[in-house]
Length: 515
Ligand SMILES: *[C@@H]1O[C@H](CO)[C@@H](O)[C@H](O)[C@H]1NC(C)=O
Ligand SMILES: *[C@@H]1O[C@H](CO)[C@@H](O)[C@H](O)[C@H]1NC(C)=O
Ligand SMILES: *[C@@H]1O[C@H](CO)[C@@H](O)[C@H](O)[C@H]1NC(C)=O
Ligand SMILES: *[C@@H]1O[C@H](CO)[C@@H](O)[C@H](O)[C@H]1NC(C)=O
Ligand SMILES: *[C@@H]1O[C@H](CO)[C@@H](O)[C@H](O)[C@H]1NC(C)=O
Ligand SMILES: *[C@@H]1O[C@H](CO)[C@@H](O)[C@H](O)[C@H]1NC(C)=O
Ligand SMILES: *[C@@H]1O[C@H](CO)[C@@H](O)[C@H](O)[C@H]1NC(C)=O
Ligand SMILES: *[C@@H]1O[C@H](CO)[C@@H](O)[C@H](O)[C@H]1NC(C)=O
Ligand SMILES: *[C@@H]1O[C@H](CO)[C@@H](O)[C@H](O)[C@H]1NC(C)=O
Ligand SMILES: *[C@@H]1O[C@H](CO)[C@@H](O)[C@H](O)[C@H]1NC(C)=O
Ligand SMILES: *[C@@H]1O[C@H](CO)[C@@H](O)[C@H](O)[C@H]1NC(C)=O
Image 1 (cartoon, rainbow, N blue to C red):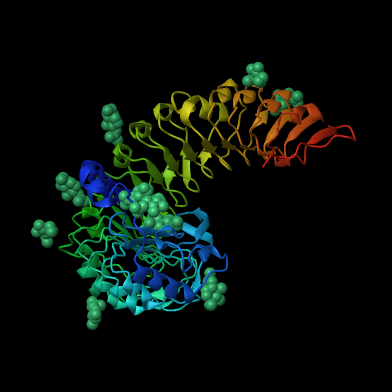
Image 2 (cartoon, helix red, strand yellow):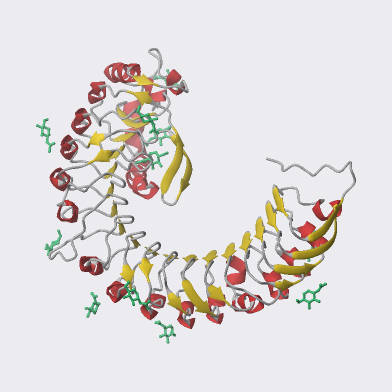
């Protein structure tokens, strides 16, 4: 989103820098422009209809220069209000959606906003408007280029008057936190010829059968997000013309069982999200021409083939998520061709065999989750991952992978590893001394293995460790306070179901994490 904002802002800065003499000549050396009285009145009336529990709008008072009020941005030359940043804040953003947020505003939206004739940016996201409808008058804010009403607890049918906002570049109406919006006819969207970014995720589009034709006619569209929209997807549709589309997310739409073949023609995409669409059978070969993809998410379907060989040739791919399918067979050594990969998730499949040695050469990789598959000897896994990958890897998750054998000193090479998750395997033998070299480690899960011997004091070197689970193993011996003396950040220790003896003086107080 930031990227789309940068364009106009940078453009304006350039313009200001390019003509400094003009700037000074009409501002008499003082570029401070105070706000326009009529616009200040409009903002005050707008405020009157809002509830603002955090008294966030206390700077909005009748005396002040409204251009200095919180959330208000004026044009530096004319003094007109150009932007209103009135969003709340998302406190838990994961999985491409906001799972919790703190609203700043509620109440009603007063049409006095119509007096802000130069308003081109309005952000009311993450607020709580108590399920009112999106008011029709928003469609008359003709100067708007950016309109963000996402997760603001609106409900009902989205007004067609938004089709009058012909300057819009960015429209976000996503409502996933509480699904409450719907859209019946997409016709009006086709007039938004400048629209680049459209997000209608979790808006009920089950009644709008023409969404595909209408969005494909938007000549400037770069990003289209339609997650969980109850879409009805035609399998085949000739003449689609998404000329500039780069990002498409159709996840969670029950498109089953076959991937629509018009998708295969979108070979210019950078990012394709088809998570949880109930696809089954093999990963379709039709995707093989999408070689410009940087981000592919096919997780949560029922794909049951091997990983197709052409996929390893996607040299620009940075993020690949094939988790939660029924994929089978080994990982091919050709995976070493995916030289751009940063994030790879193959968890919860039926993949088995060795981790190819070529993965060691994936020098950008930070995240690997291969949990719940079947790989062999743990020392073989770490041997395969030595190479430049051991300098970059931050997360390695191999929970429930039927790993056996014991650790060797290759473990010590992963200096940037922050999360190492190896629970529910059959790893035997001692914790190696080399574990003390994993100086970035924050989270170590070794629950439910057959580790034996004593806990090496070198564990105390892992000063960043926050979570340590070594429960359900065969560890023995005495654990003393010296083990923990330097673990200043440790918050969780799970060590039950071993034969450990905790021998600490009664006066010992574990250091509480500094936070
Ligand atoms: C210039 O700006 C300052 C505050 O930045 C203000 O106090 C002053 O009145 C302004 N002068 C003119 C001539 O507008
Ligand atoms: C307007 O001026 C302020 C303060 O000098 C500056 O931070 C801001 O970037 C300017 N806005 C634009 C759109 O140039
Ligand atoms: C609106 O605010 C939210 C929360 O700060 C932000 O994530 C989003 O990018 C903003 N929308 C626009 C169009 O800038
Ligand atoms: C949305 O509005 C309804 C009705 O006022 C209210 O019950 C609910 O708590 C509000 N907030 C969210 C986040 O849904
Ligand atoms: C545009 O606004 C006019 C009134 O100003 C309204 O009659 C018309 O329906 C609107 N058009 C759309 C596409 O919403
Ligand atoms: C697709 O759109 C481009 C640009 O708008 C146009 O030149 C081209 O003819 C269109 N193709 C089809 C098949 O509609
Ligand atoms: C994959 O799933 C399809 C359809 O569900 C089934 O017909 C086929 O036998 C499965 N193939 C394998 C290799 O399991
Ligand atoms: C992929 O591209 C090749 C060569 O351009 C073409 O022959 C083939 O039909 C394309 N496959 C798909 C599924 O579009
Ligand atoms: C991977 O690269 C090698 C060497 O360039 C090449 O021989 C092989 O065909 C590539 N694999 C795939 C799946 O494209
Ligand atoms: C443990 O930390 C000490 C002091 O920081 C350091 O000298 C030693 O090399 C570390 N041991 C290992 C195995 O990394
Ligand atoms: C730990 O387990 C390994 C393999 O099962 C065994 O060879 C070794 O003797 C055990 N060591 C201790 C200290 O129990």
